[in-house]
Image 1 (tube, rainbow, N blue to C red):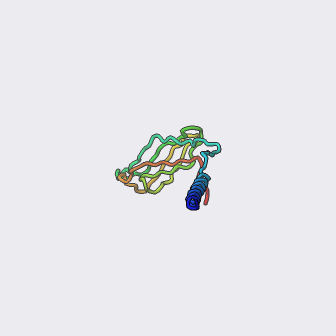
Image 2 (image 1 turned 90 degrees about the vertical axis):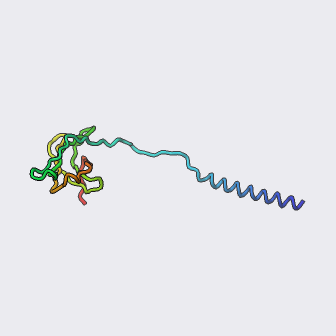
Image 3 (image 1 turned 45 degrees about the horizontal axis):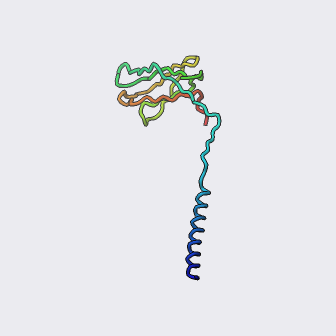
Length: 132
């Protein structure tokens, strides 16, 4: 009988350990949830009328790139525009002219080779960069 008691005690100990491991794992479950506050879509800008102004004496270089930028929705006019002519290149500051929501943009270069223009990435914002 003592031998059966040892076997029963061993089985009981295994059940207690297994049950406590299950209970511990069950405490780590997290119910599905969500959080958010006033989600809204950030409107963008439409870029149109892109012109690559080539140098008069050396047409293999670009003097400036001009285009128009207007809000795609709403009326927040662009206050800051930068472009990138290479995918991993530096950003060039552009000047804006005109009034209203649509603005003319001019990006001037010193000696940008036409063969180096591999992309035209445009960043526009309705606010200017804050002072550091």
